Image (cartoon, rainbow, N blue to C red; front, side, top):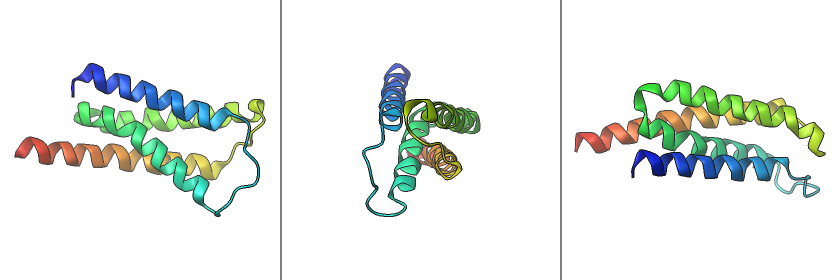
Length: 112
């Protein structure tokens, strides 16, 4: 996958995440903790492509993705949603593990 495609995938994921996290809340949540799992997976997926493409900068990628999550949490109250520290924590853990995992996968593929 070219770096241009990786940037396009990252941008598409960022827009999807923004849309889903800034739309009005759908109502009562079902399974407790499922929201945090969704944050963890979404921000891990957002960090992974850029970290894969730029493995030396995986920490900066993860920090940028975490900052994006923080920005979303700041904007949410203006969109009829509530901001939660637990969401930001899930975003950060997902971003760092997603970036770290992408680098590990990339190193394994390059070694073969």
